[in-house]
Image (cartoon, one colour):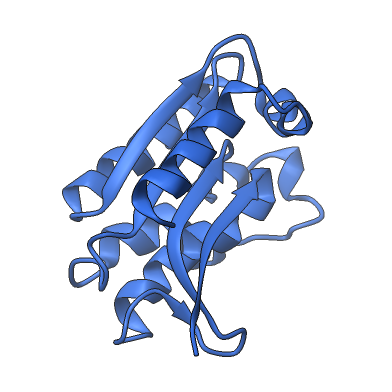
Length: 162
């Protein structure tokens, strides 16, 4: 029996759900599933960050990662999504790309680009730029019951039956 589950991740932890989008297309013919965990992914909430790792290769952030340009190309969600051969297995699967107004220009650019790629690929995607926060505050404020992102996530889950 499969259980519905929305996937969520922030910053580098956001890479896992973003990469699951690619697996949805190519590796699981029966939809966005995770057979080992017995879950069906019904939506994804991607909280800030980067989707193309190539710009990191020549920065100090790459020192502990040791990514080559080839590695970055191979594991970047943006590149995997662009290379996806077909539409999502479950067109009802929602993807919400979220970024903070005070995030770096690169986070903002990549989040918008990833959202646009999702739309071109037939995903049911939406984009939210949250005012007066950066990627740290987005996650921190999730502890506040009345935080706007909590309301967006709950509305998406209950409206769409995620």
